[in-house]
Amino acid sequence: MESDRPTTQSPGGGLAGKLAIILFVVSLLSFVTESQLTQYVQTSVGYRQPFFLFYIVHSSFIVMFPLHLIYLVVVTKRPPSHFIAGIRQALVNQLAPTPSRILDPVHTAPFPTRRLVKLVLMLTMGITAPALLWFIAVSLSAISDVTALWNTNAFFAYIFTVKIFRLNWESRKLAAVTAATVGAAAVVYGGSTSEPSDTSDPQPQDNILALALPSSPLLGDLLTLFASIGYGLYQVLYKKYVALPSDPEFELVDEYDRLPIASQDVEDDALEDTPLGPASQDSVYPPPFGLYANFFTSAIGLCTLAVLWIPIPILHYLDMERFKLPGNLFTIGIIACIAATGVLFNGGLMILLGIWGPIITSVGNLMTIVLVFISDIIWGGAVQTVTIWSAIGASIIVGAFGVLVYDMGKSARE
Image: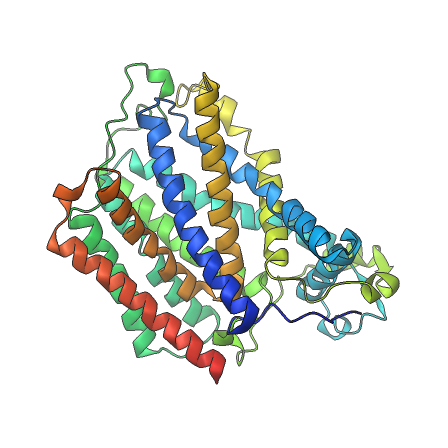
């Protein structure tokens, strides 16, 4: 088995650390661009198809793994089978029901097909449900309340991390996460987040849920809270059951559990035994930076493409979102840009969850509020809405993230 390249899964210094920082910056910029374009296409352009846009963006995740694989083949001159064999071995190592069999590639190892399919379905549901709850909540409650409550997912991610991984409470991390959450609320309620333009359409066929459900701030707030809790839990469970164990925050914790295995799954997978032998000898393992996470990102995209088209005709029939195609190439181009930036953001999130862990990643995502704050001032004409509280809130978020990054770097050095 070849391992003549630098290990790129380390989250500390070196190549992986630099790539992670670059990826983090790209992810933040992609999110801001995606948000601005999504608002633009639904307000200024008038193409209000939020569920369809959601479907297009999440289905586009499918391109991540093929594009990454093509890049690696071109750069390294290796055949794609070498990288696919490395991904296969990583999947067996993470999902195999018998840990004693996973470290010796010479012996026969079953590929966990059933467990992989179940895992992809759960990941798709885990990332889809909070997003859909958010779409519903926006139509019921004030956007400021929805935004503030959604950003509490960083706090819940820390709570779930401590409980699920059985870590000790750390006062500095708890203070940083709490401060970041308070800072997000200060930015939202301080006046920096510009209210979206009126999206009501005199033609009811373009609306989603706004006509189907009455305005109910309490229900909207509760749905957003559930979405935030669910998103925080998704990030932690992804780290626990899916990501490769490379986060220094968890290196001393032997809690990288595999998914609960049913006896029937073991019997079915035993029928699929194939020797790793020749494939493992030519595999690139551990997988290059981001390739393993991009495999799951593409798998989620494939699952979304295959399953989540079903609500589209239902929403059309119920007059909740009357389906219509974009009317011109300009709108199609904007939607393509939304999909591209959405792929970059979510793909980056999946990689960073595996490298940095859910705590730093979730707080880091709050930096998008700061960037939206700045972009609203520069391009949105929202200078008059900036207050001392919004500026303080943005500074708190940056400071809290800096504290967590310092802790991560300190852990990596030790």
